[in-house]
Length: 249
Image (cartoon, one colour):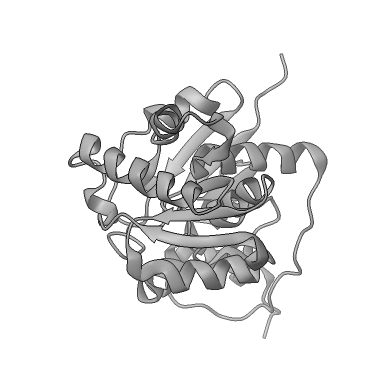
């Protein structure tokens, strides 16, 4: 029997267990081998530019460790894609950002909306969508005003707010929606049912990113040039890797 592709999911925060991952395993568990890690150092959640920067070093370190442990691909489990380009430089396996993969999935249906956790994240998502070349397809960014770490505290209430935001987006002309937080894992099915739309038009970004990672392994991918080798203090996995490649003095 062919061994399943090993996809490692890096959640770039320190809040292990902040959501129920059952919907992820139900969606992709038979397709691949999944492993996951959180950060030892970094933000409790990623909701701002400051959080993105604080999450970066630990995310790079976790990716290097995952490749050393045999991962075939990596998914960065955050819609803001923290350290995505840096991680792609640091490893030689596919690295998929939930954000960029999610935007592409939603944009395949034409006009789309991002339904995020917080309204104040709109400029960040507009910028990220622009960097992915999809600004002409973005209708709006809508926040449900529930912080990331509170999404599961009242799942019924949060789902209701998400349904309302998605309905408003589609009433305004969006053909599809992508959730602006991977913490909304499992919300797509009830949203699609409530709105009477095909499930594919509501992108649940984490399962989608895992599927994109599998396709990258199977179809090939581009490896970015490795960064220049230099001494690094801390972040042991990355420091050890660089030390092996430094010229002898």
